[in-house]
Image (cartoon, rainbow, N blue to C red):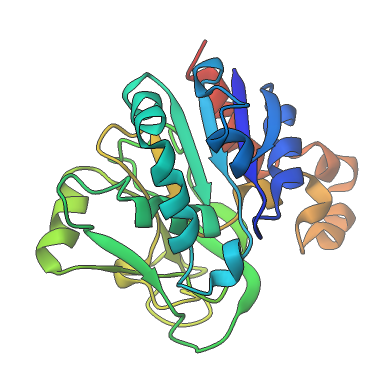
Length: 259
């Protein structure tokens, strides 16, 4: 599976994505948005598109807005890519861009957006997640009980109205939710780090092939990333180093989709 990773203009976690996808067995290429817009890169050569995190254009017009508009210039090419049997992963700022592009909405209006954290500040920490077993999401298939890092100031997921929320649920688009240490849907900080409605941490489109998430799967790509690693190493010894990080499991699903 060949994956194209978009970076530039403030997007800045491309190396984590590159490492994680390669560790899962994918072939990768990192490129800038302008190389794509100028035709130097052909999306036809790739099975997966990945939009990484960061602060595109300094979030001056709102997180992801300017980059989403630029990608709109490649509208026909992007539309052909989405219509093919491909996968798309957008994390943090990449998720914001996909939402602003309307990648998860079935109509002309966007069903959801991402806005400022309820806390009013940028939060950097780790969260627990549960996977919706009824979700159509290709990436999260057979996963559950995830532990991942978050780092964002505008990660609160909100829907246009309750009808839009119910539509996301009914379509199997709610992929992952924030939970507390007892596995219950989290409403309060820090288990729900931003105040997202229904504790939604990531969604997919109606095909399950486009996935957007605020938690960074690609940032948990090695056992030593885990803040509990020292304790795990003390209790489990060498077994701790053999535990596959939750982030890599997600990308293995992406690679396996094309086998």
